[in-house]
Amino acid sequence: MTTTPDGTQTTPAERLDEIVQRYGPDTIVEWFSQRAALEIHAASKRVGDQMADAFVGGQ
Image (cartoon, rainbow, N blue to C red):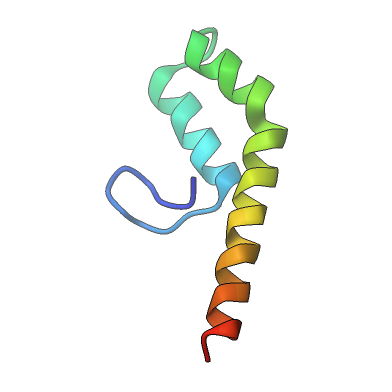
């Protein structure tokens, strides 16, 4: 959720917006994206935190 389809870095919020724009409103993808947004943001933060910890611990 932190990269676009072409590999550009982005935020989870921007990525969710891009997904909805690509698939359109009132689609199952938009519905799921909105319903799962809080968990998607939380999961993205957990992974980012773990990566930061691993980076700091690896130095």
